[in-house]
Structures are given as structure tokens and as C-alpha cells.
Image 1 (cartoon, rainbow, N blue to C red):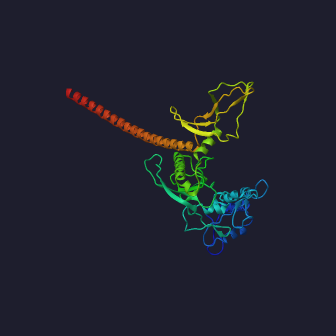
Image 2: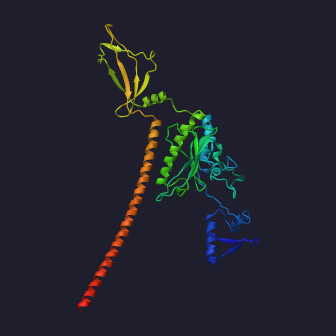
Image 3: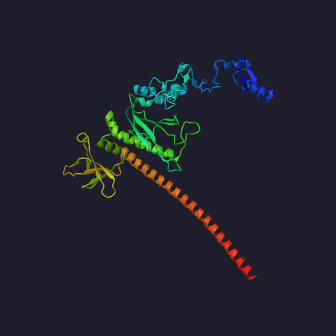
Length: 414
């Protein structure tokens, strides 16, 4: 580091130590910077004017093809990650895929302008961001939500009984694919986790729901790209899952998104559960006597019904086929069979999610109870320690009084 005084329109060196140290610093900068001479270095002050900071980045990384990872050529007003941008811009992408790639939830992965537009939660008035000569317009996704709702959350800070109020705004994103979802979580006005998906993969619940909140009660990681994995973080994740599920149940029908019908959910469950075939009211026929013929064209749709088990509380999904007649070579008789394909413990994805939420709630209450018990133990241990100190002091005083009384008795006898 070297210092100059340029207040009189020419550069005068400011030497805090010795001149040799100052010259050594200048030599090191010229050796390892993109500037070969002292004059080249001083020219960098020309566009700073009266005050400001200028950062010069050089020696950028190259990709496997030997070109810059950062792309300055395709967009004169942006800086993009070349490989990530090229991955999305494929000619084979369908219309739905192109709509998703045009949304900011996807563009912020490779576009510096898109990332900078949502980097701050509140509108900034005391500074501006200019990228490649063009002002960055701030983007607030709350303006793009429909059926928006504000939900309050009162987390309890770790190690204390203090609660804070956190407001979470969420709603459905307008005119975008339903696959766009998640929470933009900020910390002290700065974006840490964009479009954090808290619902399970493969579940349709929560699709299209986007939320925004400022979580100042949890600590971000050192790179400001994630949060530290603390108990408060996991409690927040559980709470956000509950918010999405509750909001989805109350609002999905308003935009034409409905859960699967019950009979379709049962059909989906049957496709994943291996059936157990039971044959009733018939003896197992010998393959040499007859051949069983089932006319699938006559009965293309089996009847599904679900029955609640009285003992285990589990739901049994039964699929009944109409009785079929086995054909014998002499046609001397027929035997009727009732075939039941049954499976136990059939649970839909929605039921699993609901049970998972209940378990998370119970876990959270147990953790809170454990914290209270630990605090009670600490208070009792402290009280015990104080009692021991008082007991020791009383014993010492009592011993002193005994010695003093003994000395008085000995003096009187003398």
C-alpha cells in the first residue's frame, strides 16, 4: 500500500515510515499489478474525482476451452457466467422452459445485473448501482405476487426467553411457471438465500408460492451465500414448510390448482405398493384341468375402495375384480373366484407431508422444553453453589466463635 496527496493537482508521495519502505511497496505493486510504470498507476486517479473507491480486477479465470468464465461480449450491459448462461440458452428448450429461464429466479444464477437487482430488500436512496454504464433497477418480487398474505412468526432467541417478531409475505407469482417457488431470505437487508425451496421434491404442494422475509435472528455463513446450521435455522425451515402447506390449502383452488382427486390418489398409491393376491371361495385349480380366462376388455376399470382398519388405524386400499369363470375342457362346471388385491399402510404424499409437519411441531416443542429444563438445571446448580458458599461461611464463623469462646474460658481459668 502506498499513499499520495493529489489535492494540488499533482501527486505527492505520503511517507509514513521510511522512503525505502515506500519505494519497496511501489515496486511490489508494479510487479504484480497490470500497471508497468508509476505513471500508469497514477492515471487511475483521474476518474475518481474528489472521493470514491476504484477496484481493478485482473487475471480472470479461464474455463476448459481457454476463454474467460465471465462473459462480457454477449450483453453490453451485463456480466454473466458464460457456461451457466450457455447451458440455459439451448435451441431445444420448449416454451415452458424458456419462460422459466427468463424469470429472475433462474437469471440470477448467471447474471450479475439480475443478482444485483434483488440483492437488497428495501429500496435504497443513498447510493446507486451502475453496471457497465447503466443503472441497475431494483426489483421487488413482492410487487409480482397475487393473493399475497403476511404471516407473523415469533422465534425465541437461543439461550434466552426473548421473542422477536418476523413478518413473512408470500403469495403466488404472476404469469410464471408453477415450478418457480421458494423463499427469498434476507439478513439485515441483504439477500442470503434466494428462492429457498422448503417443500419436498416431487410434491406439487407449494408450486408457484414465493415468500420474502428478513431473518436477522440467524447468522449468515462467512461467504454470505447461506446461513449457519443452527437450531434456529432448522426451526425456521420447519415454520416455513408449515406456512407453505397452510397457504396452499387455503388458496390453491383460487388459481385453478387443485390437489389430486381421492380416487386418483388411491390409484397412484396402488401403483407403488406391491399387491398381495388372495383367492377366496375356491380351490386352486390344476393347470391341466382348465385355463383361467380374464376378459380385460369387458372390465377395464376395477373398483377401488378404502377401508379403515379397526385395530391398527391403518388404511387398507382394496381393488376388487368381478368374478371370473374358469373354463374346463369338458365344460362340466364353473368355479367362481373373488380376487382381492390389497395393500396395507397406503399413505399419500399429502398425508406424509401432514404427518411430517406434526412431527416437526412436536420436535420443536420438545426442543423448547429441553431448553427450559436446561435453564432450570443451570439455575438450580447456581443456587446450590450459592448455598454451599453460604454454608461454608457459616461453618467458618461458627468455628471462629468456638475458638474465641474456648480462649475466653482458658483466660478465665488462668
